[in-house]
Image (tube, rainbow, N blue to C red; front, side, top):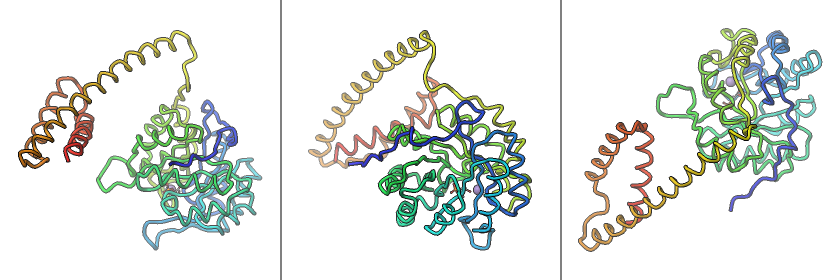
Length: 358
Ligand code: PEP
Ligand code: MN
């Protein structure tokens, strides 16, 4: 049985920014120098963000890359807090990072995607963070595993961390795709549905990998009703020591936030509410019909299974599957349905049929 973390949104008091009740976290991928940190923070003061982020301990894919300035960056972050009144946030991976952050007055820490994938480290962090007055955001693990992500949140709440939220930053992909990381929105949606009260952020910078995709990904996450954004911002992105292609300048961030529109979580007019309800009723009727058709299909599949068994014919007949797929893909064009959508539905239907015939 899944252990549901005892989290309630009320416990997490993220303040809201200009973008209709959405919390914005912005700042450089990495703190590089005192000047870069302060200049970026100064630029962000007119953008209206709540949290200034900067990575101090950087988990890099290959050794020899810039691995962060470490503890000395905390002093620069404290200056940002004092001078510009911004709350400060950084990534932690070990107990010592947590201890240093707590003594430096860091307001929020996040657990990076590579760390979330490691239950030993998450447990260590959970024990260091338990009972402390600090907010914690858990990035999704690099592999698309909703249970591993939920498990990390669970470890934190069991250890007494009260202010927990999550960040969707996409998943590693072996295939070449448009974005740096595969969005896998269905996993984010599944997490959201399992834990509707856990504040949910999106990190379009690490999803995108390139600054020109950040707007569309941010808008998509707002359309899904997520609670806030973490966007990498640098005073001089082209000179950044890490993730230079995906960082925005503070003024680019301002333009981006101005062009986003946040949706209301629920309809406010009675007319819209009742039209939506009517559409949902129509949809429910169709869903019931789909279930009936699936049941009828499964009945035939079972009969076929018995016949194949009685006649000693193998369950999987690849020729049949290929011709079925070809036919439904051809028909899907006629109906204007996306081919990949139809393909994935029929793969699930076919797999279940084969299972039933075993
Ligand atoms: C980061 O936010 O700088 C970072 C390293 O992110 P991720 O863990 O998502 O790769
Ligand atoms: Mn980064």
